[in-house]
Length: 110
Image (tube, rainbow, N blue to C red; front, side):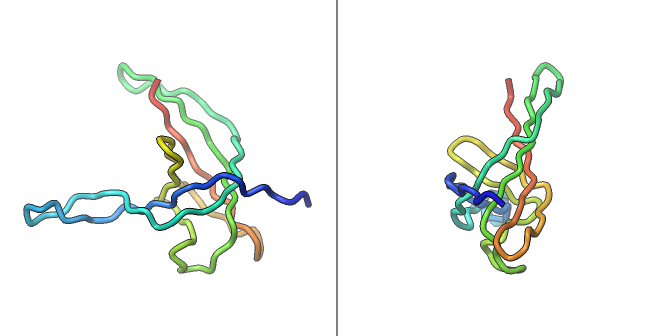
């Protein structure tokens, strides 16, 4: 097996309730940490939403393994961020003791 190059830093984010200052809460993305990853584009398509075209790309993102329940272990419904790019995590597969494979989708409005 060829060694992976985990050479892309990605911020793992989770959606949480945050106080809005008026006694209520709003949903916001909170950073949980930075993971080094290997990104592999797996395909893509364009979707028409009203007057907008959205490009959706599917990625296989590999990161170092973390125990179940650890804050550094990605899970579905979280996302990775790299600058202005956002990758919504759809599923996570355990690849043995060394790696986790995250299947994610990136959306870009055109």
